[in-house]
Image: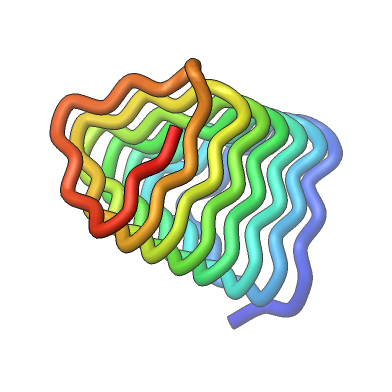
Length: 123
């Protein structure tokens, strides 16, 4: 596992495994992202899965695979084509999910979910 990574320009990578990942620029990942903390204020496209305990999206995050996280905060745009498996998600931006299984979801009007499994869902 690498230490902290900060992406400020345009980067294409096969996969990422690091402690803290901050993306201010544009990032395209062909496989998976695994990070202890993920902070996105730029644009990220992932063809695989994203695994991180803490994710903050004020920019744009598009995932073709599965999103696994404990806490997700979205004030920008999040799209997950496969599944989102999270403990808690707070949404004030726009979210487009095919399927989500979550303990808690707090959302706004910009929410599009095809299938929802949640103990607590509040809009």
